[in-house]
Image 1 (spheres, rainbow, N blue to C red):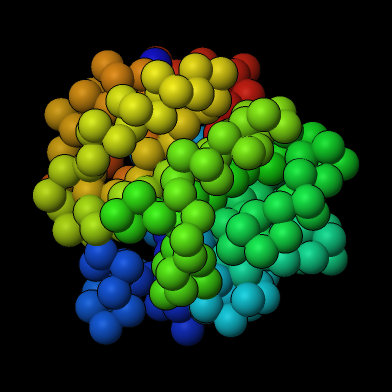
Image 2: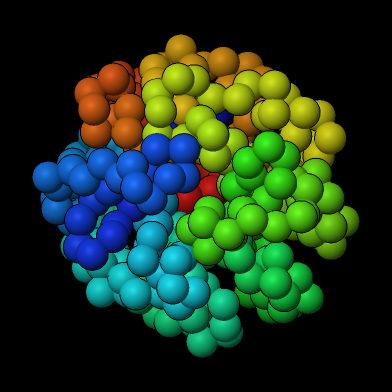
Length: 250
């Protein structure tokens, strides 16, 4: 059973979506983040992923006010990501209403600290973000290359009790050309105890169902909803069958 998690990416107050991680190909949507979140809630969605793209690029969260607004005016569980690098960042995210945080760049630059967070805050509240291009992890909003391989990066934390990972094939993100199914098949097989959340390329309910068949635990859906490729009413049957009591990912 797969969990559907709409994503809201915020940049300078706008809801945006990059194409293949290229900041010169950003699509800006005429959407207010709160209005969008409330529509998701009205459609039966229980969890969303809020991505602070400004924070990711600057290396420090910027959009705490958006997080606070969404948590204050909806009942959604919110996973917050984007520029989280310090204990203070984590604590403030939780204070502003995040249910879980996702860290990506910090896990590369300071893996010991990220591992400490898993221990200190609990593995239910900390998710690893692992966006890769050609098998190599990218950081700082996917703008900076590294020599760290996706497999090695995940395995390091998997061996240290990591439970949740959000992984994207950056080359597919925002293009509506389908996810990298073979990548997720590989990750699910290699890390059987890991809750894998797929991100990038989802264009239809059929893609979601194929990811579910592979064994992926959750899927982030953004542009497919914004562009009308997936209707919110189509998600209702999948959302309704997901158990309320399950402490899965947001």
